[in-house]
Image 1 (cartoon, rainbow, N blue to C red):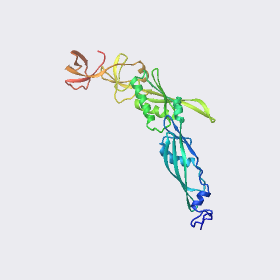
Image 2: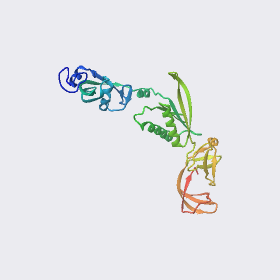
Image 3: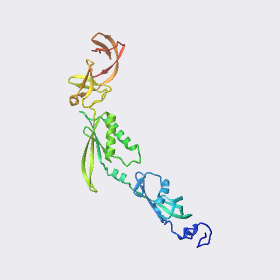
Image 4: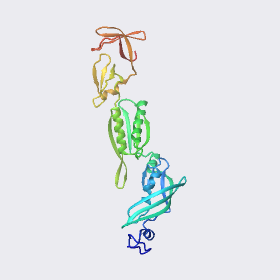
Length: 330
């Protein structure tokens, strides 16, 4: 076979060799410029409506097939390129297009300019507007959250959304309210995951309250409030209840039935119901070492800062020269 245009012998497509096919058959229509938007806040690139966190150099092999129209007769089309930066926002691309048309391999070289434009991706736009679809409300039973607990909750939620930098979920804002903290999250699924993570960290429970806040495309749109209720008293906390002193027992979490606590006067274990915990008051206290002066069947006398203090002797106490004790008031 020979080319009807130039007379060259070899494989042809519709009577034309590879070189003449490239000249006579318009397999591609290279644009004079290819525009790509880069988010000014997070650096994501707009890849035909999908914002992707990828370097510009790595995006060029993806952009060329998207932006350069190719004749459907071309089989296995491929682009290779060399990029030369002209300035901060323009790159000159020298491109080689290869494909097969029938039995002929066609090569088409061309040049185009890649123009980088600044934009804002939908995620950053919503974040700037403090958009949210869920609220994670964290409260403690019968008391206000402490500042260290609020800090820990904030860190837990932030870590949940920073694990995957490519995620479109985000925390819109954090409000410290009377008695607790409200975290506004961009999606319902993200809010549920954050609420569950906080509840697991503090041994709490989650309850969801969805509300309709509009319609889109004939469907109801919901915002969900996730109520996270954490225990009023943590393991090891000291409390005063009905005139007696208690320490919340290790290894027991607050649930529907309340907490298990140790009576610090007679060392017995008792359960304080959740509804009764509202009438319990937290006590400041710390664990200290005390020197034992003497012990009887009913008492242990210890010394603290030169003062003799008698406390009830625990049933299973083993005599020792020193003991650990919890100093509460006097």
